[in-house]
Image (tube, one colour):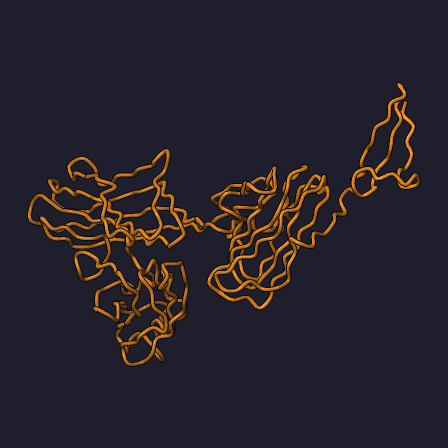
Length: 413
């Protein structure tokens, strides 16, 4: 049995802040038990700031050491950046948690906790290339329970909480319930490919695509009697592309009435164009071709009555990676001795190097279809472009080529 007394009443200075109890044990010895507030927390002054960080700037707090068990950081700012927890056993040498930091999205409240123990702690926030108008960065020490998230909320890929709801990850990606990852279904075709011809699987006039090394606006060409303002065909398009910095972006373009428009935005490649508004026809009546304004190279085509691009090409954003698990290819030909050799390439804009990443074939006399599931999946690096080309052989007749593949694109900061 132990007898406790409050050292504050005796004027003792135990625990540095007099916040505890001097205890006498049954054997006559004395000890000290420090009281720790549970749940409420103590705000840090040197790791808290409401002064916005400049564009590409960094806020670094000061080393702080106490015996509080946990640390909690709350941050909201109208810019993007990366938040880091830094720990130290000596107040000099830092260990960063997590190594890649926590992604901060403009206007979204970030809330994270970590076990601190008696170690030193400081917070660091690295701002992206935009100047915020406000920053609310607060650090607290105390004992905090694990955070929880409503069942209907989106789960960020760097969230503290453990998802306990019954969940299918891929379903939640496609439902937009997983922040930082986007699921893609890519599909394309090319019809009437002549014998002994190599062509990309897309319905554009060039056999092979030309990828941009510098950003350009896009010129949209269409039949103004059937598509465009005041027609029964397509009147509005949405572009899903990579912008001047190579980052994923989405923009809307309203078709004019003269058959040729230039977009107000520029980029380095197009992942998808879809018709988002149309007249009574409900689709684009004729082909809509999109070229780079600089150089006039074809970048995408929306086939007549399709309302969406059909190209087996994917542009990975800067600071992103893509993971592809599945590929299927098909061919259609009248002659039984026709064959199709399919090759997949990954071209990287940063290095300028094209790498062959897949090779397969279909023999018309044996089958018309090939499907591949990769058990460890295939990784695509930032700024790379995945695309597929086919080469026909056999009797002098045409071949139709079809391709589909799926992937997840992840933020990888």
